[in-house]
Length: 287
Image (cartoon, rainbow, N blue to C red; front, top):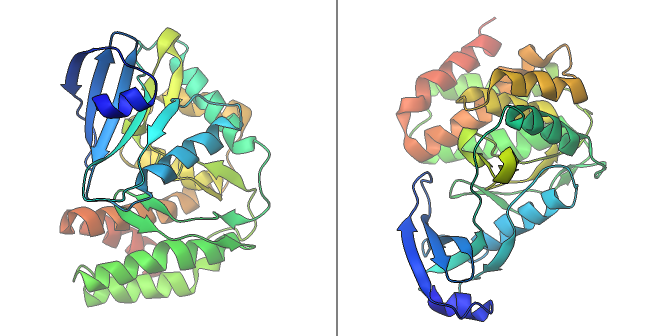
């Protein structure tokens, strides 16, 4: 860490190094030097561009000038078997009565920001440690089918987490996906992995979002995931909708958008998520 910080021009002594909890993938640390405080991630088991992709996503969000993200000072691209590190601004603060309002309004503004007319992304990203392949599509249903649901189904088959009944239902759903999802929703820049642990509070109660897996797609995809595991106050949704109202069909598509993230969790963590996957599949297929 001292070596990397010197490369940034911080030659001062390290006053404190403290492990930080909250993530499943990286080792994370609060590092305080005589000059400033840092948040540093380290990992040697991931792809060589793992931290570069994260930094690119943060920069793309920053460019919308809507919602705060941490400054990125440095990241490694692995050339040896040593730990790679990502060095960022340390964010710390206390929530105020305005924090959830700002989070809702600013996320909605990000979703409404000027963006590409196509769906997808121009490079792979990561969902957890799983590689998320991307490309550009003119049709959202095609992207969601071919780059989201099908790869997760194939991975689950490889890992013996796709029993026959589940596989049959998922296959049927994927084949008829256009019955349930809009093919041409408004394209929004999405954080892509926005659960309750991926936003935090900075100085003066200002909300920040972290750890993106960015994609351009239907903003309802993002909103659906925020509801899956909680972590967002009720007035966040009210203030979001003041800026970007939700379509009348949101409740109809929400389980189908949550299905992708449940399949990811099934593939990463195991059969504990199988019942939730099956419940959604039965909801759409067994009608």
